Image (tube, rainbow, N blue to C red):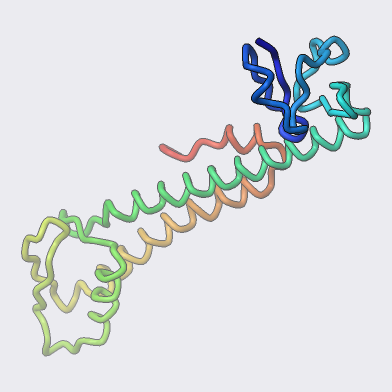
Amino acid sequence: MATVINKSSLLVKEMVNPNNYNDGEWIIDPDFSKVKDIPKGHWKIVGDQVIPKSKKERDLFDKETLDSHYRSAVTRKLREIDNEVRNRISEGFKFDKNIFSLSANAQLNWNMIKSLTKDDFPYEISTKDNKTYILKWNDISKFINVMTTTMSKHLSFGRKLKERVFKYKKYTEINDIKVANN
């Protein structure tokens, strides 16, 4: 039985049959003494030896690793912000003690109401829980205003958080941004 290390991936396998690793891609029973207590990302293979990377190579590895963490943190946080904004929009908006939808289709319908004439009122619409609501001519502006103000508030919330994400340069700062209950 032997310990082997893959020359390209640095995958270490212990207690293996060395005859299964004679293809030139593996070092059989390598000497790890030069990399003892050094993170694997700072190792390299030269010939059949496992040795530490140079300072320049370590710095490049660390920068690439940090850049990767940063990009991942940005992607995760933007997704979290988008989900929170969607959740807030899905709650709808309150008007005259009723909740109305803010879905894309509902917004089209609410904006269409602006084109109706006084003769079309009172106008029957549905609340978020499918109850009938009678919208009066005198309430159109207020209804549309509440809808657009609520939607703008949710979108502004998301936009401000995204601005904070892009302002920070460290992934730990991005991870610390609180999205929910903000």
